[in-house]
Each structure stands twice: as C-alpha cells, then as structure tokens.
Length: 258
Image (cartoon, rainbow, N blue to C red; front, side, top):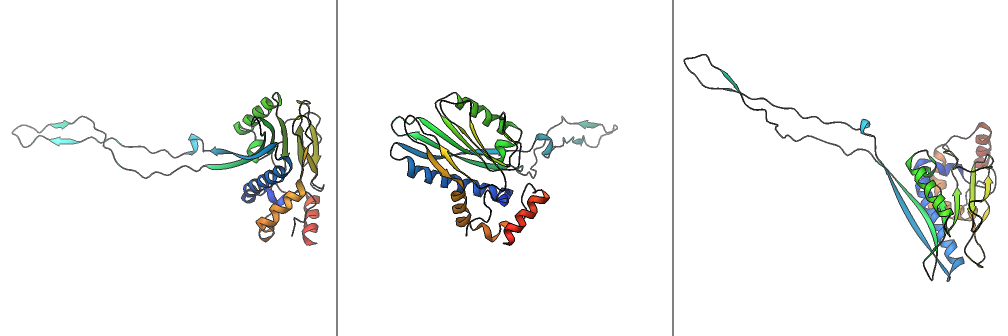
C-alpha cells in the first residue's frame, strides 16, 4: 500500500533509511523522465561518493620505544666498565585499526541532448551532505553557481527537514522545497515551498529550445519506492528524525492510526 502521508513521509529521513530511499527515488526519476524525453534526449543516473574521515585528534596514536643495550666487557682484573652501544630502533609489530569512515553516496540525474551529448538539465535530490555546513555543501553550492551561468537548467528537490536550507532570497519558511532554475531566467529560480502536511506536487522539468517541459509526479514516485522497498514493515519502529513538533507529531500519529 502507498505511503499514508499526503506529502513527504517524515519517517523516511531516518539515517538508516534515507540513503536507500534516495538511491531508489533517483532511479524512479530516471525511468519516469526517460519515457518522456526519448528519442531527442537521454537520461543518465550519476553518483557522487562522499567519504568523511575522523580528524587527526580523534585517531589513536601508536608510539614505539627505543631500546638501549648494556654489555659487560667480560671479567678483568680491573673494575668492569659498562659499554653503552649506539641506540638502535628495533622494529616491532603492533596492532592497528582502520579509522571509522562515513561513506555517503549521492545519486543525481542528468538529461543530455542525444545529438551533441550536451548537458541540458540536472536534477538534484538533495542529501544531508548538501545541506550540512562544511566542504560538501560549499562544493555543491559552487557547482550550482557555475551551472547557473551555463546553458544547463537545474532542478533541486529538497525532501529533507533536517539541515539548514540552501541560500535563497525571499524563500518563506517551509519544510521541503523544489527549485527550478530555468534557462534563460537564471540566476532567478521558481521555488515551490512545501509544508509537511502539503501534498507533494507535480513539478516541471525544463528541456531546451522549443521542446515542452517534462514532468515528475513526486507523490507517485514516492509511493512506488515505498511499496517496492516494503518500508511499512519496519519504518515506523523508530521516530522521525529530526523530531516533529508536538502538533505535527500528533498529526502524524493520527495518520498512522487511521
């Protein structure tokens, strides 16, 4: 059965679920778009891999010891004299551990012109690494800024309540957001602010020239992923992350109870 929520399911943002949902959702987007844009365009599913390592202060340090050997020169009639050999480092084996790393895979979708392979539209389903303050966010914002001055249109789909919103002027408070950077209107963008209790919309996907927009029914795509993954069997054993407000938690509980 489909997701019981009218819009985005807040339980899908749990860390143990999100990456699976993100990859499956991107795959559904690719399949939906490919059926609409062929044969003039083709759709590719691409992936970025983010590897986060602990800081040097968090890693254990292994220290070796220097050995100094004392030798007796043997019995003599004189007082024995201790001879100190030059210090030599002895190589000894030690047990080491691989530091913990966090590997995050971020799938995104490209629409390319069949004739010249030019990138026409990029569809980004934002991941936590895109939104958290740090180098991954900065790298993504720089890439987005560069593309706004190219011939490429951009569609950003933010289905995460967690993390600071990407910088936009005049964007009202919202739980989720879809943003469409359409050529030749960039750097202006069309934004669709979405609340937790709102239905997920059907969004336009711009192409190029005189070709009409493709479209994505976000709710239908979410339902297909939800059914195929069997999320209802285990999703609700944990609470939404980040936590819902008291009123939204009561609303979500009533949805699940019904």
